[in-house]
Length: 62
Figure 1 (cartoon, rainbow, N blue to C red):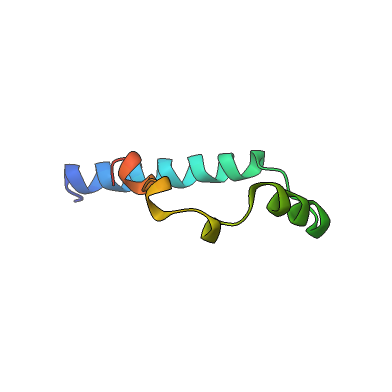
Figure 2 (figure 1 turned 90 degrees about the vertical axis):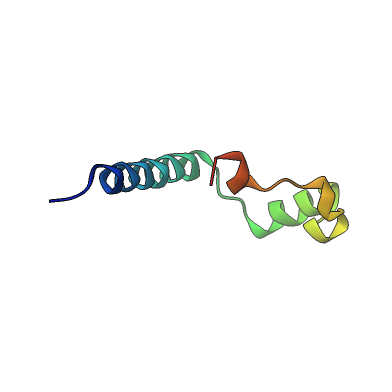
């Protein structure tokens, strides 16, 4: 028999995976040309200071 907490962890992980899949399905694919245009406007991550970012896993409670 599976422990209650283990079951909750399994369900939570499954929900996270499903939500990620749903989010990724909403993100449009871009061509290389479009990606280059985006990078020319906003730059690349290396153009920004580390403290300008936040830890997404911390934000979702991991």
